[in-house]
Image (cartoon, rainbow, N blue to C red; front, side, top):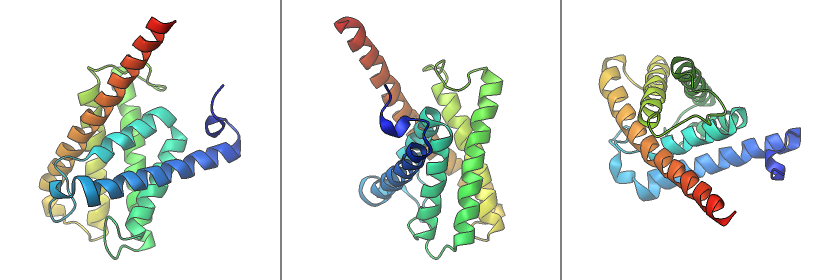
Length: 195
């Protein structure tokens, strides 16, 4: 039987969405302030960004509730001034909407291209770098375009900024997802040997 928070009841779904939002917000704050603050340039572009892997894992594992929780987390991070100081609600909303939509569209496109679809049971080690790269590229381009329209970034810096975001997001995603796949394999082996 699934835990209460994973039940299809609407209260459980809302609780799951809020849990994901709080969890991901915490992951970003811990990453940015405590662990990898040294890995960022002055515009908060990281050459190693593990929250991208956490984000991808949440969306792969939880689907829409994970995506909704991610949206709320990004909105809170922007409006709260954690990612971008002096961001308005509208700016935060548009950036969160663009990032969330781009991740979902990238995952759906990746599924069509590779024929690996939700619930992602067929995802293997071989898919990992390509999935991370593809999602990071689409998300990075959309985020930069939205931020450029809002006047936060400049269109002229598209290639440099997106390249740095894609590198950091991809590296962080590969590390986190590889760890999760390794844990899944170890757990299955443990269950097989104790059964």
